Image (cartoon, rainbow, N blue to C red; front, side, top):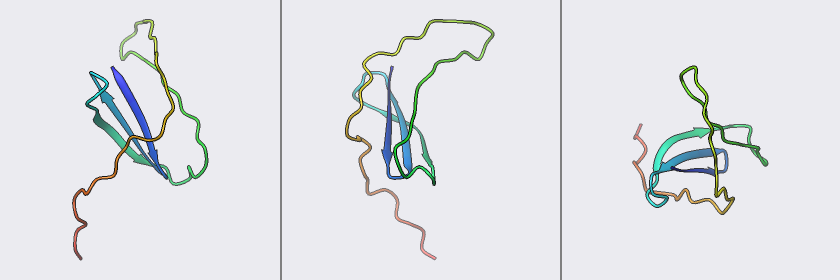
Length: 77
């Protein structure tokens, strides 16, 4: 599974992919006081009372890949 975390100013997008090519949006959020550098990380957990080993590989930091889109026009007042 691939995950991608992108930032555009104070907006953040988290996506996932089964093949590393086609990504699907999981969440978009806005953080109003995240004007400078941020710290982030990843973790794995289980909803049950169990344990497992999780290994994360091939982490990279690159230019953002969250492309702008035409999207829906705003509602008119």
